[in-house]
Length: 132
Image (cartoon, rainbow, N blue to C red; front, side, top):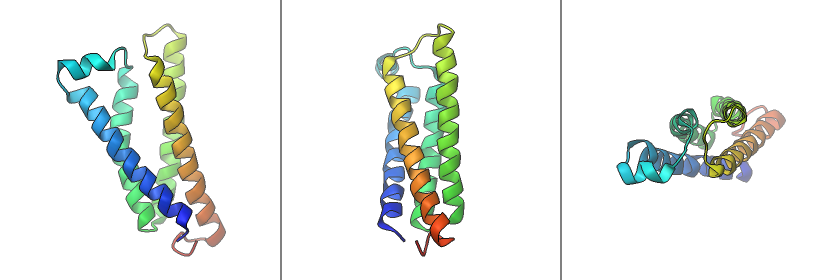
């Protein structure tokens, strides 16, 4: 397996763990933790929290060279972009939001587009990521 795929897998797992930690704290933490979130958009917060589980699953699947993990990575990238667009509509319609959400969603989108691209490239060239 290519080093790039292994790095992408480890990034996915780490990103997932950090997402679950921060999202869990924001959603299930005490009043101080919830207050620190500010004007977080609930559907974005919940999506990101649940996506954290998918991040870890995709990362483990890539480490194990599973073809489904490549498709899951692409699905995560696409879903993240769709939620980002929905967030944009929320903002455009005058909904409250935190500016840091724009940065966070940009980072999530770029990370998952990169992970999907690396894993798809490895699969596309070799037909099987174990041999890539």
